[in-house]
Length: 498
Image (cartoon, rainbow, N blue to C red; front, top):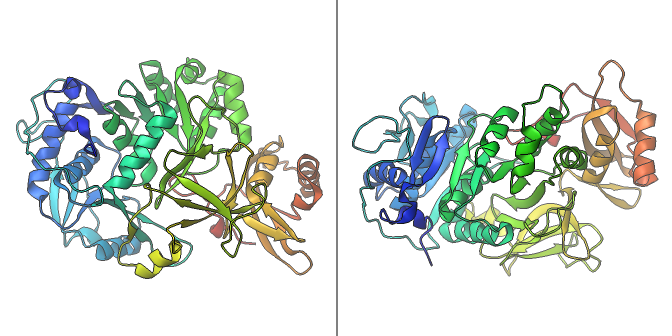
């Protein structure tokens, strides 16, 4: 098996002088990234685990690459995590050291850890690197760890209890990134643009390690803006990764007369526009396609499974779907009792199996056993249907998005898309609530386009019934100023209460 990051292994390779990562005015070539990472790797070699204060900076990239080169599991920490949750993560993962930029102010929960300041310059100059040329890497000569050895421990919040640490082996990262290489025809010539946080799978593994594994480049915007997207795509970017909130803002910007000059052309010129982490509303798909002629494609993954499905670069970009299973991934839909679904057009829970799976939840054998079947299928908790050609249509989470009303199984996602097609709706979420007659009733949470004149509940119910079917219409409509969302833009439905 080839090294996880092969372009960082050979200082004499043609890619050594190529730009690897860029954050604003800080640019690191592959040679410079290797030099800076080796300076840290030498100091953490042999550690049990290290924490990484994962700000959207080049220092975070250096820290993670250093841990991967040294074969030390890294625990990315979200700088916005609250003190109680952060204390739990630190106690559970027990890192010996925290890697951070010298300018970072760390919270008290990390006070007991040894702090190691990360430089982008390596051990020589002590100055920030801002050009693509530089000295050859130090060549610390770390052996490539076993494919099954843990690379990252990424904490994921469940529906109950404190976050669990998903242990991600090098094998899973390599398998997922190589499957995306196959699906998206991803090469070292690609330049990825994104503004995703670097403490989770989407931003860190796909958005940073993905380009580095291919020998390509990544330009991180630091903070998302339509102007930044337009600038970087127009100046050589070939791929854009984002979450639905970002694409919604791009769609709004495209419709705004004061939008950045060239935004539509920049998006149209990208080879791939990819959305993930949550479903992209069909309404935003259509707005972007109408303005640019370019379709956004979607993929589906989880912290524990990395990437499961994706629309191929040479496939049909079908709004409302996340494509077919990626190379090496087995996927099936099951009934509530775990038996395979006889009719794939019905709603069932997604289970997946393959080399992309995590190893275990750290210190949680009970949770690991509950998540996996005896023959190795991971229970995702996501509900979906399958199109005849194998494309997956996710309708939502089993716990929050599957509504059983009047004997029907109803997915919240299709009702949300229908609501967003109404001109009086800016944002929408759908949940189920207990009903003495129906079992559960459909409840719509709506942010009106014009707060002073919201559409009536009856108008919204009729709109959904006309687009879908009468049993899917919302029985209750509640109006909000905004929907609660997390850092990835996902709607936090458990925060919605009647």
